[in-house]
Image 1 (tube, rainbow, N blue to C red):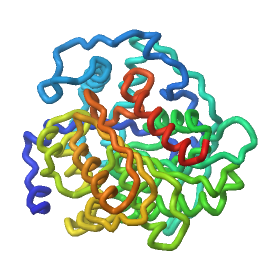
Image 2 (cartoon, rainbow, N blue to C red):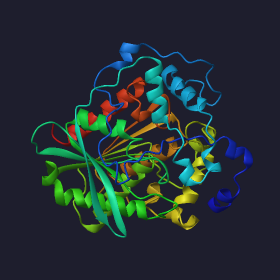
Image 3 (cartoon, helix red, strand yellow):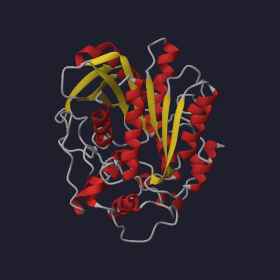
Image 4 (cartoon, one colour):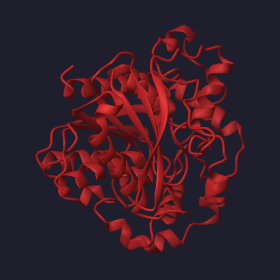
Length: 379
C-alpha cells in the first residue's frame, strides 16, 4: 500500500512541496563554532513589535492561521524557491528555510535579536563509520547542570544545527541546562538506520562524558523536532532495550511517528506549508532503503513497544501533516502506562516551535516544554 503511493507522486504533487530549510556550514571543519545570532526568546519581542500584519488573505488550507504565522509563511513563499522534491538532496539543503523567513520578518519589522544567554562550543565525536559534530550550549556558571540532548528536524535529509539554533538556544536558556545539539549524518548519503544510530551514539557519549560538559548524569533529557522527534523517541527505546539509563524526560515536537501518509492530518493538510504530504514521501524515499523500513518500530513509533518509555511532552501544530502522528503517539504512550503531556497549538504550522521572536504560540510552546523539563530536573 505504502510502496505504491511512494511511486506515484504526480507532477501536481511536486509543485506544492515547499519546505525550505537553510543549508549552513556548521558541520564543516572550518566553521564549528557557535553562531552569533539566535531567535531564542529571552525578551518579549512580540509585545515590542505588536501584531504582525499579513499582506494577503489567509491561505485556503489554513483559514484560522494566526496573523504572525501567516506573515512568516508569506515571507517564506516570497523566496520563490523550487519545490524541494524537484531537487537533489544537496540542492534542497541550499534553499531558504523557515528560520531565514523569521530572521527576515524580524528585519522587516525592526524586531531586535535577543542577546544570547548561553555560550557555545563545537565538539566532534567518533561514531561507527566516521565522526559527527555536536554543538554544546552552556549556561553561565560552573554547574553541574541538567543536560538536554537535542535532535533537529529536516526529514533526516536536510537542515542542520544552524537551522534549528533558535529552538536549541531557547530551551537551553529557559531550562538552565547544558544542551547538546546533534548533527547526525543525513540521507540519501547515509540511509536508515544511520541517523538513528548516530543519535544513540551521541546520547551514549553524553552519558559517559557529562562531567566534561558540566552536566549532571542523573538529569539527562531528550528533545527533538519533526524527524528529530522521531530520533529522540527512538533513542529512548534503544536505551531501554540496551539496558542503558533512559532519559528522565523527553519532549517530542511534531514528531514523525509513523509511515502512514493517509492519516487524517495528512489528508487535511496535504497541501500545507512549509510541510506537505509529497515532501514527507520524498523524505521517506531518501532516508529509507525500502518500504519495509517504514514498518520498523524506530520509524513507526505508534506500532512500537512503548512500555518503559520516559515521561513525555508531545507538541503538535494544527496545520501540519504530522499532527495525527503526534496525537496517536500520545495515545499509544498513555496506553502503555507512560505519563504524557500533549498539546496541539491552533493557528500555526509545522516548524512554528523555533519562531518565538515573532509567533506568540511558539513562545508559549517553548515555555511549556521548558517548564516540563525543569520539573523533570527537579528545578
